Image (cartoon, rainbow, N blue to C red):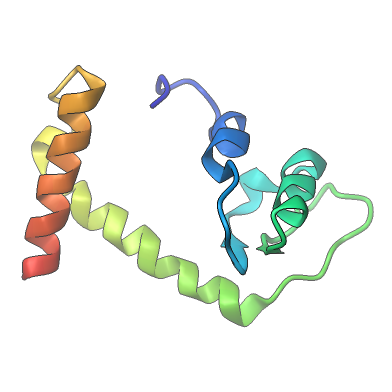
Length: 109
């Protein structure tokens, strides 16, 4: 977990780690050469749209990228829980447990 002011791409290297994946779906914020190299190193295909200011625009699977909205909708459902949206639990471990509990409740419905 990071502070609210930290950009998501800062944690991308740790997040990917040595995971095995066929595809990595992410938004434009993760379109950096360093992250793309890491994705290629783990043997996955990057499904990340290129930023508009990139000199050489890369290709990506637009149809597969559309599936990313499932994750975004799940985060929207998580934010319906006030304690999660406002980060009521200040300790990281407790906040993670609250997210796990809310996720279970969402999946049960």
